Image (cartoon, rainbow, N blue to C red; front, side):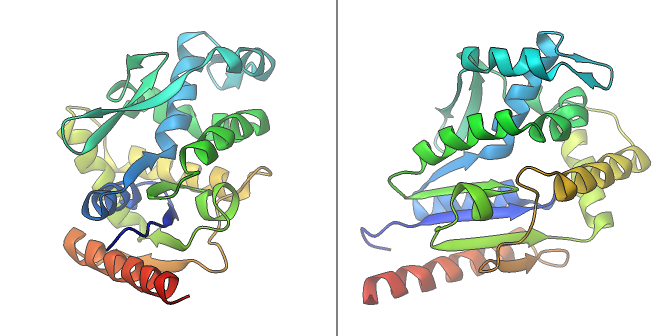
Length: 234
């Protein structure tokens, strides 16, 4: 696609496959993939490790005070994957576990946490040539992104995808538990006061309920090519 590079923002609900799409799209375009959700999971893991989360209670004051001591980065593993590092420790597997999944949405609601991570995300994307996925990428992090995609799928498809993901990692779960978790996260993400999940006005929606990964990827590649062509012509 030449030397021109754009910023691609991919938003959507949990377990819609947006990270898979973003990662594969970045690989095909030779762009950098940034999993913003992993960054929030990293902060959540930090909070759990430091007893900032006790049951359902979060000591927001303590977390905000400790934010400057949190270092989050992505380091390449192999040819395509970048693992999240929390204070120079590879925590890619640990941030996908249930305790983090259960608490990440309330942590992501905290205004100071979002500002802390949005600032970092914007620095990462300053030069373009990135694909970033999350819940407020096209609306808050990169409102001027050349391509915005909003990914969705029906709840039962999402439940099965999450079950398959957990099973592949050797984590036991059941459909009701996963459905409850996804429903709760949808509600929190969509109704929070700070940067709620919503489709940007200029985003292209992809409902991948009945699409294969390859079909979804090809559709996204077509959209990226269209944006690049428009950029070159202008």
